Length: 110
Image 1 (spheres, rainbow, N blue to C red):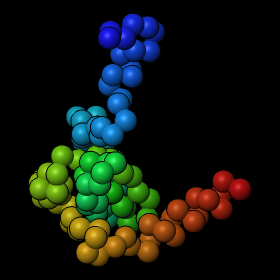
Image 2 (cartoon, rainbow, N blue to C red):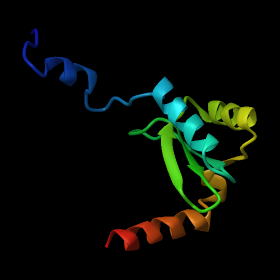
Image 3 (cartoon, rainbow, N blue to C red):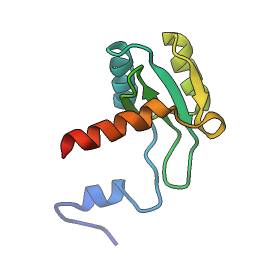
């Protein structure tokens, strides 16, 4: 059976049960984000059945961003190259400043 239609190419790329790996766009976002914040630390989140390995970058004030990264080793290399400490979130958890930042943002939005 051949799929033909306006959205057939999208359906083939986003099959249920498949995960998207890290892309250059993900890495570029992380690089730019880290370069424009101070006190950045990286927290590696393990791969799950739904999501590839991700890294959460957290700045000194708790602002954070999350993107896919190739592997835990890739996260370590990313951190070493930029002088950013890298932690495994499963071992150390998230810092309180991340939760506090998220709460501040929720309150500011109303």
